[in-house]
Image (cartoon, rainbow, N blue to C red; front, side, top):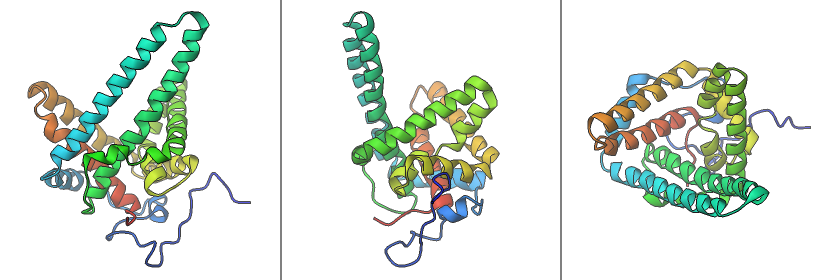
Length: 244
């Protein structure tokens, strides 16, 4: 019987399964056979923003607008209910909101991944994985539950899992893994260089925050696309990118 807790083994030989470029693979990633240099990742991400920053920024902005409007609508519906009905509706509303958010955010992450290997991208990527709604939501649900449990039991496990599950959603869509395979593949791959990943994410978070505060939000036009590309470059270096 196959062990469902093991990351999948894929056959990377042959034209149909050829990975774009000289990048990584699932097999290499889970044993830590990949490059992750702080300066190289940030420098390449900055260079790659040229010509696509508005596509990436508009996709992210559209995600925020859609999320806010859906959330307002769901809250309005819930607040009109009374008693136990409102609790049931609130749970259903949160599931609906999550179901919309995860696939759209995954699409934005894949925008960065695809652009890192020279593919053409557009802001409509946020709707690209609606057809994978169920596996993406299941992966997101387990990711959220396990991370929150880690925070509840002890802060450090929660932080560890938050970083470790970073690539679970794009692995579901870009590599067509099952939700649990994606979670375990992401965790095992990132585990080898966890502190490097955490440092890069912290640095981009700090840069984004400062650009928003000090430059009255104008700097976000550059830092948000750069952050998306940083994620894309790291994913590419670890797992490679499948052809269309």
